[in-house]
Image 1 (cartoon, protein in one colour):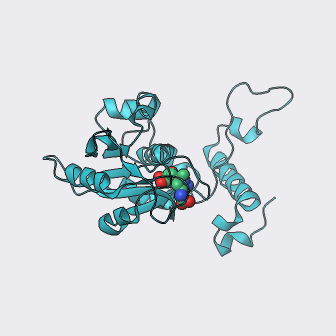
Image 2 (image 1 turned 45 degrees about the vertical axis):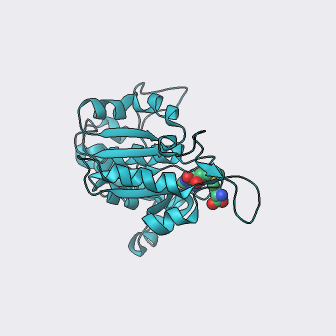
Length: 237
Ligand code: SAM
């Protein structure tokens, strides 16, 4: 899967791209991430890509021409595949695991990272991007939001995780639309706190039952909104 990131701050990405699962996925050719500096599409001699808002008010607005030119030139590349264009915005549809699953089925995703007051409205009117918000708060820019999208999507790409069951059993995921159960590892006891006996029993049937019950209990306590009506009324101990 290919990601193209369009940003005014390309230097925010090398650290992120060079670590952990994402770095491994890139090295193994499962994921390709290209970072593009929006200033490369500025026609201004000072490489400006923003301007003051018509009507006045604070802040600057990202100009329409460099953004449209950039997207059109990415689409005109020889190796270009049909793209899925995302514009990161606090005003977009809210990101959740369903949206991540939808994005993981794409061959290519372009992520437009805003800054300042955001984009000139005509970027949206002309390019009709999928506007995505990572939550009801305002970031300084779309770069961290782009990393959030990529980080969650790559977990679903076959071969990226060592064990495919990991994402299937994760909270909110296809195999488990609830919160995941608790995990424990060695030591068996720490500061008087032990590990549930069943996890040490070696009985896989009982372990699966315990995990399912824990998952339901936790979800009821913390996120009852995730449960269907059949679960909401069932007692848990
Ligand atoms: N003036 C805009 C508003 O009130 O809707 C906020 C602009 S914000 C300071 C600058 C950029 O950060 C946005 O263009 C967007 O790309 C990014 N951004 C901020 N909050 C975000 C969020 N919750 N989700 C995704 N992107 C966000």
